[in-house]
Image (cartoon, rainbow, N blue to C red; front, side, top):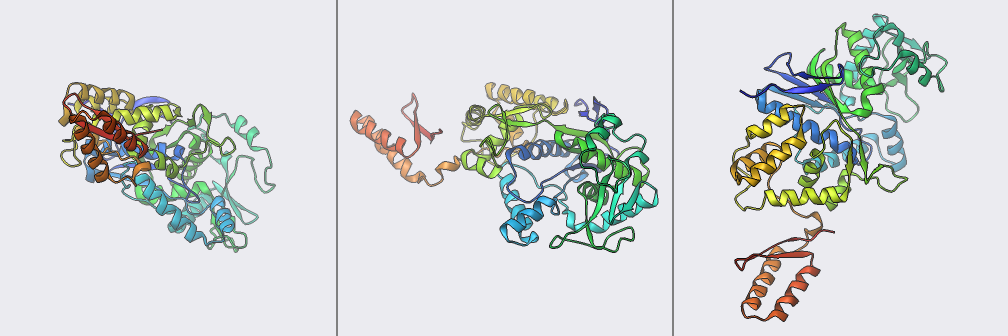
Length: 448
């Protein structure tokens, strides 16, 4: 029998055995994109990591017994500003951006979640949560805003483990005069002219829109219940976003926890530096896919343990590409067949998604020549078995093959000059030849 799944829980700072509330309906929520522009490569990390977790849970409990919710934030200050900048409607901007997001992550081998709720479709749930918080004394109305009263929750800060006095000191910059405490945060605010708006809760006459944190509390409640198994996201969301989600949900429903396990992935930097538009190293998923196959990006993201920082480098991507080439070397890999995780790989993943160890086990399967187990496991982990160079899609494969056959004929006739000429012609097309000892020639698209 396989070992139990163990996950590092941010809430307790310990690696714990995963025990679902209901094994027939394992429930996981992950914070998804804010759809105002192309998602950057750092956003791809939680998408890929928690897709792997989704696949693992389906393997353990059955596909019909796992519900994965990944939300879409489609009401936000950045969205309003970008729509105004482009002179388009907010809905046009968010719909177009979400369509592009889906196209990009599909190339990364990511499954669609069970539910992908949009914030704007859950305004009524947000209003009900806010009304409940006001009624219970955990929120108050001030100058047409509704704010969460942080001091009303004695154990606020359990997730981030930040002392209240430290958080309060950090919150004192530009504190709104209507706040009772500098830590209090917005649940609802009045809309400005041209911004999306809805009827306000708590008896406020002016139309308004929700704060960021209440959105995820409402969507997780609607689709997963008052308490669920796993909440996941990036390390940067621990405070204030996830801390405030916990405060809203627990205080509204009177529960001990919002989710039993909290998982957070580490930061990503590019070539040793923090990704920044000012440094010129800001990489979107869309642009990365113009240079690298999606499966290469997926493998490269999984080579580092999800809780550790990752350095995104061209050299590492090259190595990932070489690894996949070696795994896909045999033509019998195919895209169909079984999708089962080999026991040695499963054992690694059960240990807090230990993907570096899992990849080492995949190398071991390859080295042993266990092609069936390797192919089946890779399929189960989201790898289809084919990598095409996105920069070489315009190359005519039939023309390449014809030139290779002409070169083989020239070599057979010992016409080395003609053989070299064809080789150089293919190289100019971006094609790299590999001559085998048996007289055959294979080829691939050359990289940088």
